[in-house]
Image (cartoon, rainbow, N blue to C red; front, top):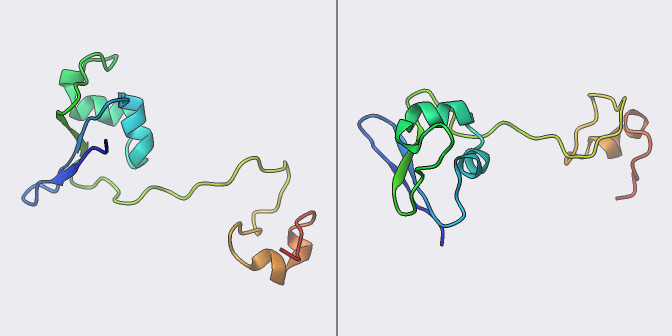
Length: 107
C-alpha cells in the first residue's frame, strides 16, 4: 500500500499518509528534502522517538521553503581520490577517459 501525498494550496504544506512499515526515518529517507529534526518539529505529536506515528494518519513533510526535489546523490562505492570532474551517468568518461582512469570507456 502506498501512502498518499496531499498539498494544501493555500499554505504550500505537504502531507504524507503513513502506511504499514513507515517510521519517521523511513519517511525522511523517502523524500530526502528535510531532516528528521524537521519532521519532529513539524509533527510534535509523533513524540521524540516516533512512538506515535499511526497508519492512515497524515504527517507534514513540507512547509513553505522546503525544497521540492532531493539533492543529487553520489553513487557508492567511490574509489578514494577520484577526480571531481568525473560525472557519473553522463558521457564525460567516454569523452575524457583520462579523467576517469579505471572506468571502462567501452561501456
